Length: 124
Image 1 (spheres, rainbow, N blue to C red):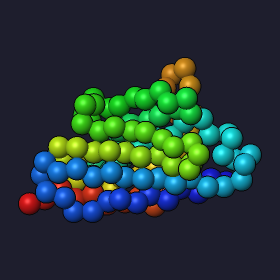
Image 2: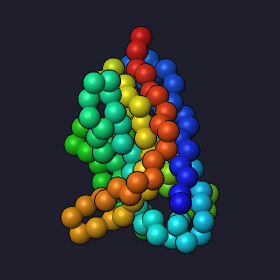
Image 3: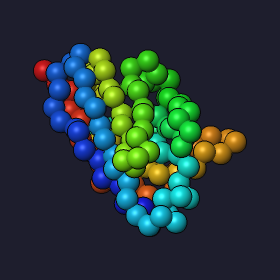
């Protein structure tokens, strides 16, 4: 099993920035099975969407809706993945979830390891 804990959400004004963190823990065998991590978000009344992924080697992918605005990174020594979010707008308001998964030839595959989420509210 892999446990994921997100932090860093909060209330920010339009145009502001936030940096989310996700710490992964679990058995060595479970963690070794994870070769990519992803950040998802779910806005009120909308489906959960994938916004960014990063592989163990550092390759990244972004949803077109956040490309150039969000940056995903990781610190393998700390088992931590980050999501730097800049120029935030009200439409970025959502619960942001961390996920552990696989990097496949057809894209990111989300395993059933999720954090509880962290709420980001963009409002003046």
